[in-house]
Image 1 (cartoon, one colour):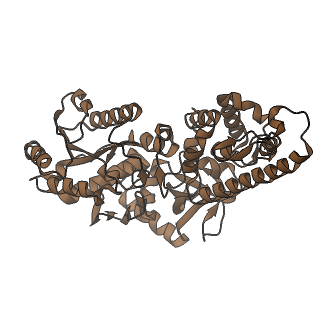
Image 2: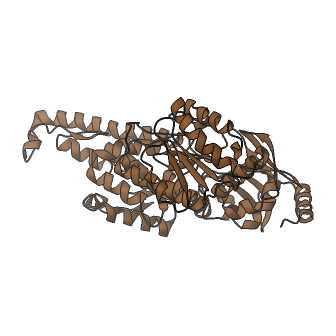
Image 3: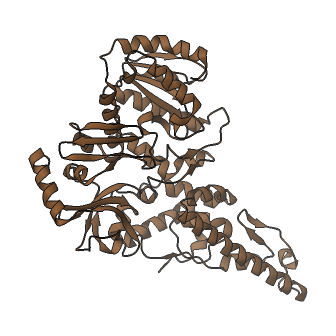
Length: 493
């Protein structure tokens, strides 16, 4: 256990407090327990958990009781009794009152700790932080400082696959899982055949394609003579822009926000930035939008633009879009549905695993139809998407190709090839791995299995406890020889 001395003194300087914790974690790793004596009000506990603090004491709630203060998840309430007036010693009648407050305050702390334990297990801890952080100015400042820290400790620990992502305020736009999505979106490249961008507003229902408005949008697109040349992009807060081929990824598939009909200035800046980057990087021939206020479209050089007002399922809006879209797609080379679907899968791989990984799959053909799609190579099934997968899931044959990128690997020791792998059996790991990423297991550089990361690469490499990888498939010695021979014959290292 590592003790952070005089932790309560850091409340006046949250940035210094965060810097101290980040430095401690950088030096000691994620495994040692971090204890902050004197901190631990119920209203502070969620923030402390976010900051990777493991142990607190009852000193803060006990002191509050002696001062006649009641503690809860919303802060401190009610100055009561002679102690609040500055009396040197409590009256005899106040001893009972102080004892009752002491018991209630400790019970509140225990209840909040139990709630946070359940929230961590249920992948809802960040939502609890959003609800609790506004109880104190220092906790708001600490959350902001931690999630924007240059060391990216928060990004390392943030999962890329969760059950839900609730965004309640502008402060939640800095959530690590949202920032990780935006970071990976910078490496995304549109499907090559999709040279016409159609920007539409988001829907409350997820995935987008199951909503009424997106179904109407797709009906409009499919009515065009060259529908697979159109790239549908959802404009949304808190993610800025979500290409429809990424709708199953996290947090696009699970986020929820309060809808007011207007964007805050920070949301407007985010949308302007991300839509502009996506369109400039995609080098589209034409763009149409039914999202009001997207003036950034006119700032993209060489891009013909049409902007309408209203919702895509409204007949008058569809009529305004149909003509310009018809002219744009007719001027392009005809795109086959199968070719576009294969490109969509490779675009997903680019977002999830990087451009070099997508290059390894350029000759693969597609089998199936959304949401059950597979990429097939000469050596067999390379991987694909299934409902609930939140991305592309490579097979062993797929990893035989992708291993040449030198990324997403976990080095394991001489373990029995059964079950999942705990951190104690991992010697090293790619530091870019986040919880929820697809990874491959290797021994001495040779592929021995694949699965889903249960911890970050930093935690896997530095910890001796906890689950590291949920293994989906172990490769037997016979399979290792067979897959190695097939990969060599196909010309893939």
